[in-house]
Image (tube, rainbow, N blue to C red; front, side, top):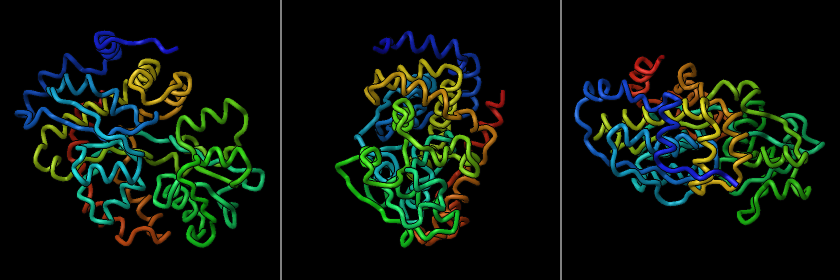
Length: 336
């Protein structure tokens, strides 16, 4: 059973990790001007890899936010993008490829940073040894446009396949692809934490691609922070402070994955502390300083354009749906 934490214990952990930046905070906040709003809402997404938006809660309080909430309960990817586009939520940490699709469709969202790399893994049976082997095979997804579908389609397009013609997509909203894979009803599927950790623990998985280790996927963010266009434009000081809290939460996930894992379990976002700890220990949360967020959107937008899933050029998607000024400032500020 996970060890329950009090708010004071978690704050103590932040202090020990140096993530709260308590000594630097007053000086940084004083130079930024008044916080335009003390309210921020994140789209609530079950799972593990988007831990920084939950670990950031106490860091957000240190930044001056007093009304912090996690609203709705939506799947990562397109549903999370839609929640922010409708202003049902102000921010979300979610997958890069669905963000590109959302921007292409005119969704009023603004991507402000990459968050982490390496959370998805492609699994295949004995007939699938590479991405190219997906041609003519059945791949399980919970819906067209889902994160599983979009990322797998982008990977297929990268190796020259036509995702619409070369892959047989098996859609079953009521049964998870991992279950179909175990029963031998599909050839492959894309898994997100805690699925890879569970399959590996039970020795029933054949990993074709690990995005934490295999190029080119390991060279780009898989999840990014996006806000509603209205919030980002109206509240630039608040936006910068939200991003600072999330990036410090990234660092905390690296320094103290056990504390972050307990937070995820105690928040009811996953039931398995062991899988959460394994995932948080494996996912590279420390790449936000060195990786280029714009390159990530350009890479996935190009793959999706090749697959016929977006109409806009990568440059247009970047121009219409990104704002890197906050990230650029924070890279200088938090370089230590």
